Image 1 (cartoon, rainbow, N blue to C red):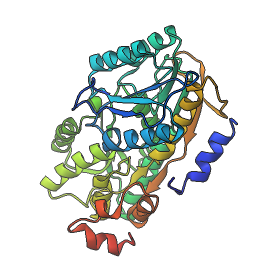
Image 2: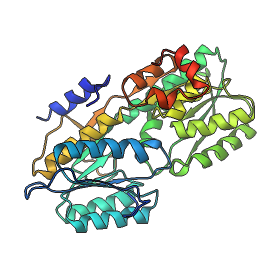
Image 3: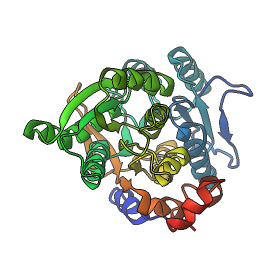
Amino acid sequence: MRKGMFALAAAGLLATGSMAACGGDSGEETGSSGTSGSSVGKVGVILPDTASSQRWGSDDPKFLKAAFDAAGVQVDIQNAQGDKSQFQTIADGMISSGVKVLMIVNLDSGTGKAVLDKAKSAGIATIDYDRLTLNGGANYYVSFDNVAVGKLQGEGLVKCLTDMKAVKPVVAELNGSPTDNNATLFKEGYDSVLKPKYDSGDYVKGPDQSVPDWDNAQAGTIFEQMLTQNKNIKGVLAANDGLGNAVVSVLKKNKLNGKVPVTGQDATVQGLQNILAGDQCMTVYKAIKQEADAAADLAISLAKGEKKSVSQSVKDPESGQDVPSVLLVPKAIYKENVKDVVADGFVTKDQLCTGDFAKLCTDNGVS
């Protein structure tokens, strides 16, 4: 088990309480190394897509499967590939197959709630993973403190603009999907940092637009339009690394990369390489293995007919209910501490330090 920089924090949080349809291209991962006894049920996991972030196609399935396999609990992990109908079809199949626990990353709260309601009607315990399903009533919610993620992004952009000695910079905001509650929380966080700057006149509020479904191609089109309409944009709050890379690509076409700081999130290989190259200002690292382990720990207990207590809760803004939660701590990553993500084992040196990035890795202490 990897010992990461946040392992103690994650352990402390847990200690307080004690996706496409089946097929070769479905993204399905089924753990079956342990045999389920009569008292231990199977767990179903539905992930959202493989396009918006690398984590859904590689990191989360890997870490979740490892955690369930280690506990000898059967798990069926499938990916909805961004298709709401497919999401519901997968859920129906899992419910019919008799899973005892259903863990979902919703595509939107409406679809997510419909699935959670069906599961609850069938007596199945539910977990919201990474994204809270509004008015969904899941038994648990496991994520990062997403307002804190946004605050780190806002503070990161301020730091980079300050380092560049920017005067009254026009700041564009490229927000995540309007159907993702996390995107709302990220924006709440970074706007809490940026709004006082706008109000004081230190910064000028520029275009502010959400990107449907976190679609990176649409993000590039949207930002290109922003830049066409306002060539004085001097900073970009991009809500994740995929959106950030879309911005960087447009800036490169206009020979502005490295001159306009851009934020990100997820500490993807691409995002970290953009940071090393000086084209992206920062990203936010979320130790996904800890999130997967925390969610799996709760699901395993539920599969065994147990229910753990947790020390945190999140108020659902629609239902007003407090959802028992595990919220992990994010970390801001700049060029000088890219090495921390590698040291934590989330990204390997071989993945990051390819081609021209080898020297940049050496120069920035990545080993």
